[in-house]
Length: 277
Image 1 (tube, rainbow, N blue to C red):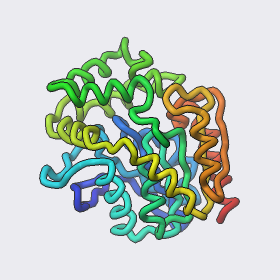
Image 2: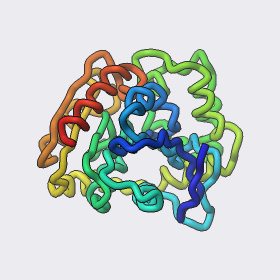
Image 3: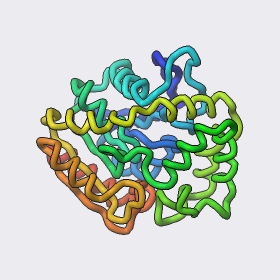
């Protein structure tokens, strides 16, 4: 897997290559690029698809300890990733986390389109029971290690305070184990995770939402009807804020639509990019 040295640290990524429209897929907390494993093959034949693994707890290489790690750091890391690889006309796609909203506001120059998929927005932080559990774990000494061990227990994975809140269908055990292994085995990754979560500004996404009014480029908002973490009205609100926003709601799915309804999601992405090319 290729990697790139950025200001905040080393980021690994996958790149299908090719000459088609560039699509960059961003994941959420305690996931890595494998959350897109069913989407990439559907787009790859005629798109160049890149999937970086962000420092959200499932990354394998710790970030530089002397560089502050916060949502603002990740926004700049994403922008630097696009710059260093000289990616233009990018369709920036994000699920679960909300950093792409701020990227679109602060660094729109390389973006052609924006796709927001059931993500944090407005004042929804921490989102749902899992978000509150993460916040509490990060504030208690040893809490992150304990949380990772609990989530790693197979009988508990479907509980509504864990991965069960994110999907209607079980995520394969080998994928979940890959997501959790860095937090379970590497103290430096746990330190990164705490640094990130303890640096969240509660007003960040409210500010980003206001800024989205100026993102006058094609934008697609895809929301899960059965989402337990991201309020349904937030999808409608984001679509209304974006000057060229369009809302698609997907049934029989929770937050991770790429897990619950990958074929439908891939079809919506393909159609959106083709329509706005």
